[in-house]
Image (cartoon, rainbow, N blue to C red; front, side, top):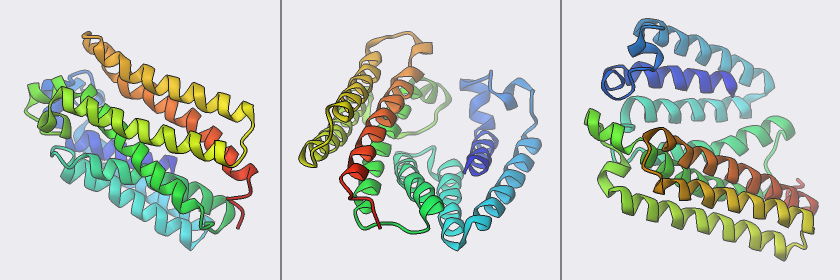
Length: 239
């Protein structure tokens, strides 16, 4: 998956070379550190190696890897500069737990479908936060996004709604399955980090904007770790 992420990231820089010259001149291609052609080649090589690695695990991992790569490339090459950019972002986050679990266990328990659904919703929250972080740069470069379509206020409101739903479902599930105080404490820390990230949207300094989604991502990661540990201890993730 790391190699596939390298492929998607390189393809992203390849596709955004022109707009990055205006909005993000310090990135590798506009700054001259890497040529656009080299980024394209790196993407192809990383994709090939990533798929070979996935195939070495099994057919299921290869299929999920292909889906993840296709999803990322659709985002990079087709939907990133559109109001629908959140969709492949959210679906990609939903594929990550499938890839990891299938690679480790070789199968997916029925209850894991709930994990995937919540991951997609968490991906939506992160996509909105990420779009908000890039809002001013996208406006300067003329790049469309869900944030330029909704505006700053509605983007943050939608982000807060998605984040709240994820947190309520995770904590409520842990409570319902008799999760330990330690797990609930971890989930509480994750929730606090999530809202701290969202709160950084009130800071007007441009260099602070990426922290809106980065801190929120760490919060979701901590929350997810506690939630998955609770589901596993309750026996819901056993095949």
